[in-house]
Image (tube, rainbow, N blue to C red; front, side, top):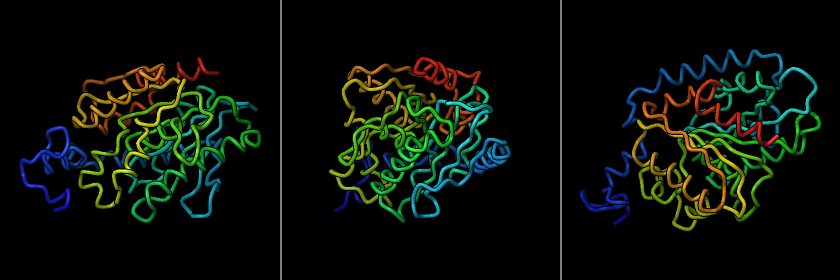
Length: 293
């Protein structure tokens, strides 16, 4: 019997039976209609992409999705850089939909890059992750070309994008942690073992070893960079647990952690905080960037 054929009521993970665990990793059990949020992301991102400082579709790899959109502030720099990875369960969305945080950073003299990548199941998760790292490394290698400060690079992500951002600062068997000075991790997944046991593994196809190897919570290096870990009190319970557990693990490793918990926010409403410099989430990250530059 496969993990996904477990009988109702039989615990699969932390007391959840199969149906309950599947529901914990399915955002549509939380918000049935996410279309309004996707329209909002598209509209606000289309407006952001009219900014004069945009360098669109910079290629860092061979496939059409391996492109970066880079937004630069006015002036000559060198500018701190935030490298952002979008969410979508590793299967959906694109960089064009997640340009909307750019103005909040650019207005504070910080460059913003949104990295695109191939999606599962057309590529395996480890390939997707390697592409994300390649995009980050490409930006660092080409910093002087765009007036960026290669010694002031930060990363950020939401949902599965927070998993990618966390992997940038924890490393893997193929690469050590990137030279990143700090991170903003919003509503992320940091331990893939419950994901492997859930219905999501129907497209991820992870075994236990792969899940462990690609889980940033188990790969925190010594002397880790400072991070802001944010989540909503209206998130699914497993997403709240994942964020709290990662923040605790980071702190145990000696890292500086700022936890931001928005009691009324859910997995989708919290995305608005990515573009609000007056809010607690982005405010904490901007303070982290200021301290690191």
